[in-house]
Length: 113
Length: 115
Image 1 (cartoon, rainbow over the protein chains, first blue to last red):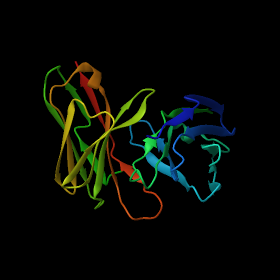
Image 2 (cartoon, rainbow over the protein chains, first blue to last red):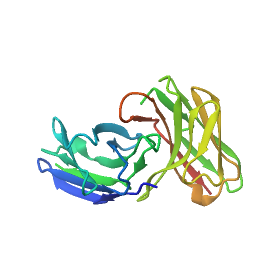
Image 3 (tube, rainbow over the protein chains, first blue to last red):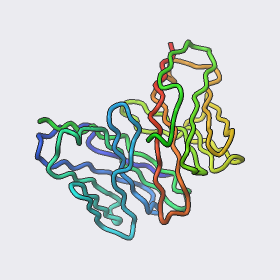
Image 4 (cartoon, one colour):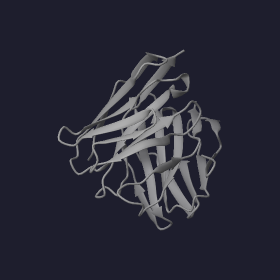
């Protein structure tokens, strides 16, 4: 089955800095890679996703890149703000797996004012 | 997401007790899931259901059972709770046929403590 590794487990940055979270996956059949943000006391919520036919996708201050050859994908947050502080999960899924996601272990991002 | 509700939000129980966690959704999705979250271990799938008559085990189903009472309702039961089932439990839903992938919509979670 799919295995998703996520690093780092904790990331501390100063407000205004950039933050990068990296994930690797093992199943070459995976073709959908969502990122979820979990704020304190809430359930995870999708913030951005990328499909295997695209190398990069941006949405305001967040972007995701995908390298299919190396089987890794990354989340980039620019100009971080305190409200970006949360736990972020990457995931990978495939049509053959009925798009049931395998999640990484999560990254706790702390943005210091 | 208010479209997916979980009850109770917090529960304390004792070892050996049977408990049920309930999930309801108004999104009209066929697919529903139960996950468990532990610090440092991420989200692990317990059970999932693609429709009312279809229920499947996830990677950590031992000690759990589920019931899909209707399209909108999916319950998780711990037959005989043990302390290592202390965790944060999430229900999620998803649609199908929206393209090359699908988004999961999570409830607010149930924090369970087994003494």
